[in-house]
Image: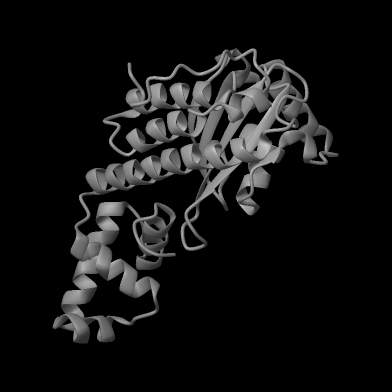
Length: 266
């Protein structure tokens, strides 16, 4: 599959990072791939673009994970791997997203950083990081992607190379800028897809989302009814239907679920 309009071939992956990023077509190749991500029809196409983007950046492999800041357990995560998958089971057995120091960094920071800059002292976290080294992430660049403080979902693009110190070398600054654009586009694609899936599964309408957002902002049934020209009884009835659709016991739980999925402002 063609992944960009640039006809220039990228330098060989055996080249140094400095040589790769200094190539005249480097940024253009990455940008042309990133620009196609929003239109990806499904996860398979997104995965192909991820692989193309990783190669264009000069990395050998990558792992992408999207998760919720307050809920890094497996149920909240979305994974895409462009690396050997065999280590994944061991990663999950050792605690995976729940204790991963790389994921914890992405949850609180937005700046890309080389993994070697993290001071990991907890033995369990060190064991998880060592699994990544076994999977070929001898040198790794961590690229967080955030949508702002009102959205709980965060993503992390981990770029890997089998050469020790590869990302710590000259050329890192330009790589960081281009890797960020790729990570953010993939992150935004996942946000849109999660929203679509939640809406399709629950059949929530835009009017119902507006109702939840008003409640989340602190409006009472009386005020909501006044602003929407509805009786208080009608407002309460709509909340009852919403609770049934979402399978929750209260309007507060319904609003929190919508906020956690990025359907309303948090």
